[in-house]
Amino acid sequence: MVVSKETIEREAAEAASKGLSLDDSCPYPFRSAAGMHFKASYFQALLQQKPQPQPSTPA
Image (cartoon, rainbow, N blue to C red; front, side):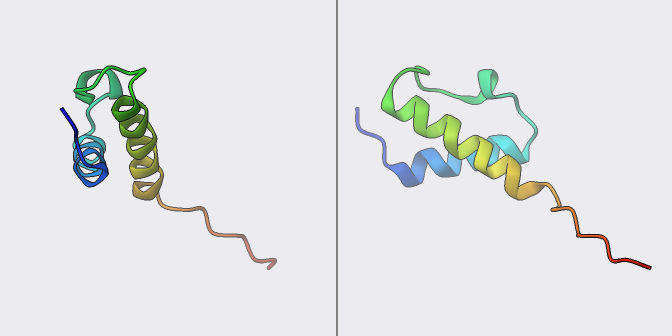
């Protein structure tokens, strides 16, 4: 079965936004190409969710 990158990225982003763990949310074998792409997309989605720290300005 071939799964598009867009599908994997959408699934990973949805899992990350729901707060699901990587282990519970990845439907692909971790060592497969799909599993590795899911993992990368999942962590990218987590990084995009967190507010980025603002540089402090001297007072």
